[in-house]
Image (cartoon, rainbow, N blue to C red):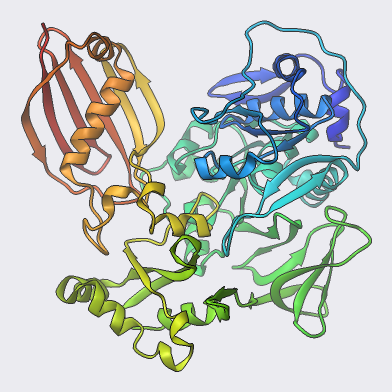
Length: 576
């Protein structure tokens, strides 16, 4: 029998003090340590007047402890999908309190964690109280807030345990998906917590990290976006033996990816169908049977007029039907197929426009691999098109330019839609941007049209540093600012940016270089031995090795991966 979230909040003996909760690295953190961390959060937040508290923690142990503290104080946790300034600004009318891993330079108040511990007295709460507020993915517009009560979350976790609990009793839960969404949060953190199983606190940034955990049975939580790029050099024999079940959600899993995943993991991927509003609704293993089976306790039906799938679930409302946006066909055995989503309708110049219709037309063009449209509210609510071209399309882009290519792509659109609905703004990318759940959000698409929203730096996913040497593992964002125009359809990272990043991270991570910068004695003199051997493209994972010689004032940098040596060189600073 699994525990409820309120039991974990207020019953200190839910588990023994030495009960293992999770791994952080290879360190096991116990129930007692979780309670201590919760007490720290609670004491720090006890004077906060906001009823809602925004929380974002990259570490799962930190997030759980913060949630327990917020709930003990009778408050509601707002869990945004990211920490972008636009996201934080959107939350500012709901709360002034942001805790965890936010960039707080523009926030007037923030609760921080003190070093000392204080006792706290638990306060009772009702199962119908709102526990958390999550946000939809924003695939077709701005993310919408979705409130979840304790009863709904408990029902979701009970459904998962009833469906798969017996098969996963002694497994370690870990995954590549964010725990700030309604897939990663219950599957990666809450489910193992309430059932007494271990989880890994850190989100895996790339699949090679699975090799660290092959000495124990694994429940792996991932997305089609990660499964599309399975590494060839991982120890798949050990992973096949360790992986008990692989769950994936967030986007459709292609047949080829399903086959490749079966070959690598030795297990069929269990795909989860659901949404932020519904939680888990159904599952399938498409190579066995490409139909969806409702999970334990969930009822399904079909709307008479729209053919939309109807869902009745204790994780939503056990007494009412919820209508999804997915059309379906239901079979006598209570399994179902999905037949596409309802058109995405937007208003352009007061006219209703189907983005789905235009996307389908553009995607049928022989030069196009994939296309996504977005309504750009900051550009007079006109439509922007993000296009992934095929090889022939990229040749046309280089030979004829953006304007002529856009004219070719839209040649027949005026026969389908009014002129106001034809995309006015175009971006050509090597890959349609996707988040870690495999979703393409309107926010990510919009950022391609507004340079101020595009990142200027790579994401640091791992660092090992001393005073004068540092090894960083980086991922290169698909929507990096410096890819714009360099080059359309086939973006590569400019060499000058690589040099700038080496200087930036050297000053950030290397203490000796930082000291000289602070004293004003590290004036740049020249570059030496700079070599660019392989291009760096969007979406890649690579290492940056930095070494600073204090005596000579030289910062040496090398970008490399398992397969390539990309670039290297030295920056010489004055060392007086």
